[in-house]
Image (cartoon, rainbow, N blue to C red; front, side, top):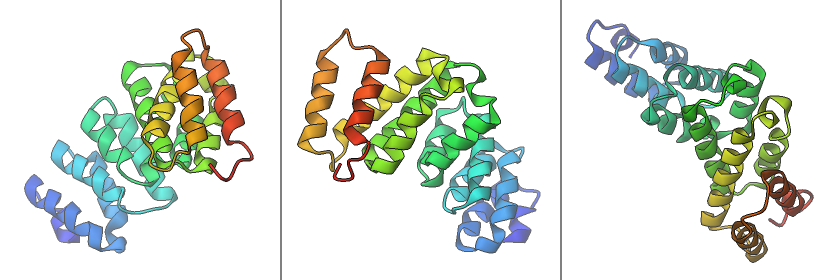
Length: 199
């Protein structure tokens, strides 16, 4: 597999990256292929990296997002993995600073999709983390970030098979009130989930 990852043929490197999914010892080599000159190899490396877990994986996926994030295929590849749609990834993006320095359309779209996954997954701890992150200075200073996250989160919660009737009722009321500001939506969602492990 390591020989395939170093081959001169992009096609062989791509298959090498696919095979690397079976061998954790090849993870570091597979991660380096995110920077491969062949976009197909880089895309497969992003998918393969997402099959693993840990700090190295999260850092690599954040790098892939920074480099290829304007491509929706790469966004989907990142979000399809557990670590690529985790609070830890969002935390890293906040810490790095460059992601939230400007509300580019593709970044706003990624945050909305990220929040949708969090809502669909419906883990209280992750929902609370996301809602808390929306009050961070780097996110709060631009309302587009908050609006995108709340839109994605509420859509995800509406489609989640584990959302309770109470959650659905609150979401319906929020959706019906066109005058409701994003800060109030965040407050209502936070009140709904904080300290409520039954949700």
